[in-house]
Image 1 (cartoon, one colour):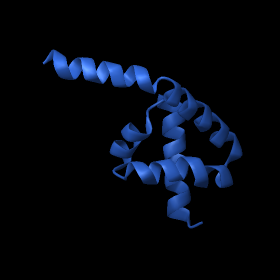
Image 2 (cartoon, helix red, strand yellow):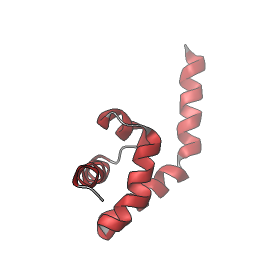
Image 3 (cartoon, one colour):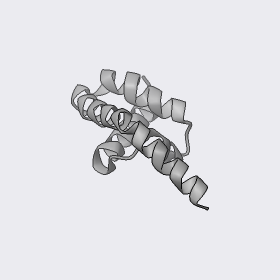
Image 4 (cartoon, helix red, strand yellow):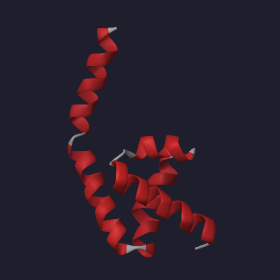
Length: 81
């Protein structure tokens, strides 16, 4: 894997570990697509750094487990306007 991609993947992983942000928020921050962030953190990171991958994977699983709560909050805000 070339160096710029490896650097980007590690920066995304560090940012997620530090801030606990979602894939969507990371995509906005780094100005790349959500699918690229997902591929970076799910496929590429495992090959680069297994320890960071394990930490990121735990965060992603947590986000998946609370997805229905976040969706309900968004809907509530939408109709409160």
